[in-house]
Amino acid sequence: MNSRLGRLGTLRVSPALLMLLLLPLLTVLPAVPIDETRYLSIAWEMRQSGSWITLHLNGFPYVDKPPLLFWMINAGWSVLGISLWSARAMVLLFGMACVELCRQLERRLAPDASGQAAWLLMGFIFFAMFSGVVMFDVTLCFCVLLGFLAIVTYVQTGNRAALLLLFVGSVLGVLAKGPVALLHLALPILAARWWSAAERPVSWRKVITMVLVAVLGGLPALLWAWAAVHNLDATDAHNLLLRQTAGRVVESFAHNRPFWWYLPWVPVLLLPWPILLRWRRVTAVAGERSGSAAARFGLSASVPALFAFCLVSGKQLHYLLPLLPGVALLLGAWLRRDAELLSSRRMWTMVVVFSALWLWSKFGRPPMSMEDTHGDTAIWLHLLSASLIALAALYLLLSRHERAERRATVAMLLLTMALLPILRLQVLGAMDLTGIAQRVASLRERGVPIARSDDEPGLITFLARLPEPLAAAEDPMAWAKQHPDGYFLFYAGRGRVPSDVEDSAKFANGWVSLVSSRAALANPQLLSRPPKSVRGLDVN
Image (cartoon, rainbow, N blue to C red; front, side, top):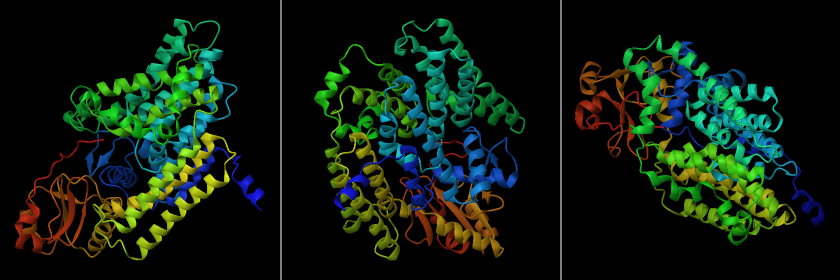
């Protein structure tokens, strides 16, 4: 029996398919405000209004992001049904595709590779976490990898079909998150003469051709923008065409951070690999003069882009997610030079850390949670998390003969899954808007008047399945006087939740509450807290 269990510890499964393990846990976390709830509401308004070109949030044109993610969410809803799970499942499919494309890209650059980069990419806890979140970065990562594969194929073979693939990757990338996709693609193209392992150097003609094809990939996005501005006023059109990109680069209207801000976070983003690397061996491997094509490509796809993002005014950690495939290619090349570069036994450190997190979630005081952390739901979530941590430990025991990157990646995936219930209990339970959304839907069905503050960022439009967004009231107290039997959805961008409100949720900064007109009239302070954000600006 022991030998049979030992064979089970040796995996012969594609890393992309292993990501399907995340599917059952995609609903453990509630829709995370403000980002996920906003994007889900935009996709829902697209479906309700039938406006597939001009995006809307709370009935107003939304000009901060291109439409690809919202199109894909609606495609997923058409196939899998309308739910938070199906929207996240679409993002997870893009994550799986990223892992597979990384494997193919590495094989192109290093024919002797055995999939190291794909396993390493999936092992990043940051990548696995965001593969189950409705945001743009995993989708952009897929588009960038599609372009990377086309670039390498064209450099190696000169096949013009690769230029078509590069064009498609560029088109999808710009439609996914705007011109930033061109930045990711341009850097490896411009460095092609350096990273190529071909005996004959890459001609500048090839380099210029690839640059032109990538830039031309932005034309369909311009056509979309041109079609969208026909329904916009002059201010929104200016925001769509110019401000959303230039504003973040020069002087960001949100998340304006200093040049060095990303640097302390880099080791965290690369977990668990900084813990598992034998750093003395890294010095010897990285110091070799004749770097492989995979290592050089990985450097050109990650380090210059990191420097470029440091120069950009607006900074968020998830902006760096498309850099992880380049890091995985680099680590994979180093690992092929030195098979002992990784110490998978150090994964026990991560098991200990996650066990400590579980103990804290079980016996510690939640920093944000407003729900009963000792109820039946909490018991099952604690049990689920503990079981996954135990399963990761068991796998480490049974897979001693497995390759280091595979052993560490599977254990890290299980630990990442174990982290989700902990996050639900300790942080995101306080942010769960499901109860407020259900109350709004119930009140609306009974014909009770409901309004919202004018800066409310689409928090419950999807969750409540509203046929149209709630009407905004610029003067909450005046509205409450006109509708004494009504309710007001009040969003505050800063401050704490008042103690005398019934239905509420708090965020890292700010809160939202469903306040009855009677309560507001009795205590006007409930609706007097000035919000921090401004309607129409996307802070991500």
